[in-house]
Image 1 (cartoon, helix red, strand yellow):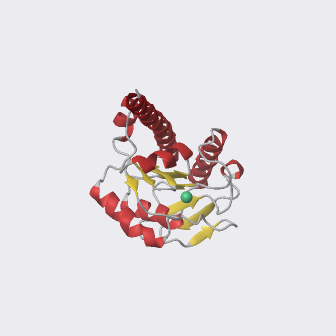
Image 2 (cartoon, rainbow, N blue to C red; image 1 turned 120 degrees about the vertical axis):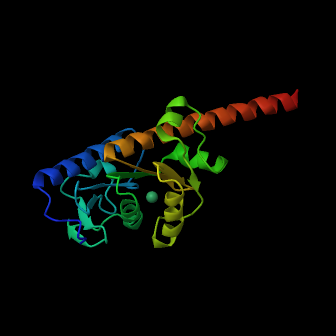
Image 3 (cartoon, rainbow, N blue to C red; image 1 turned 60 degrees about the vertical axis):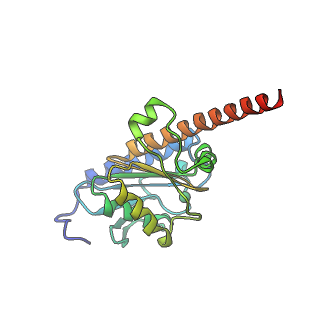
Length: 214
Ligand SMILES: [Zn+2]
C-alpha cells in the first residue's frame, strides 16, 4: 500500500462508496446501458489509495455492497470474497495517472460500439455532449483491457489531461470522473450521443442514395 494512506478510512466512507457503486450499477442495468454480466465500475475511497471494484462475473443488477472487492492501487486484494473485475488493470492505471478521478464506469453499450466504426471519435453532434464531454476518442484496440493495452491508454491520457471518456473499438465506453455517478452520467450521454450520431449518419446516407437513384 502506498505512503499516501496515513490511516484506515472510516467505515462511513467505505459504506458511501459501496452504496454509490451498487446504485449506479443498478441504474445502468435498468436502462440497458449494460445487459448481462458485462461491464464494470469502481470508486476510490476518498483520501486513500484504495479502490472498490465490481467482482468479476457479477452482473450490474446483482452488484451489492456485499460482493464488491477492495484492492490497493498496486492491485493487492484486501477485502471481498470474489475476484476483482478482469479489467482491473485499466481501472488502476487511470487512478494512478489521474489523481482527480474518483470513479470509473465501463459498459459495452451497443449504439456506441456501432458508432465507433464510423471514425476516430464519436461525433459530439449535440450541444450537451459537446459542452459536457468535449471529445470522445475511439481507441482501436481489440479484446479486453488487459496489461497489453495499457501503454496505448496511458499515451492517450497523457495527450489530454482533461479527457473524461473514451471508447474502445468493438468493446465499449470507458468513463472516469470526480464521482462514479458523474462517470455513469457521462457514459449515458455518450450512448445517447452515439444513437443520435448514428441516426443522423444513416439519414444522410439515405438522402445520398435517393439523390443517386433519381
Ligand atoms: Zn469490457
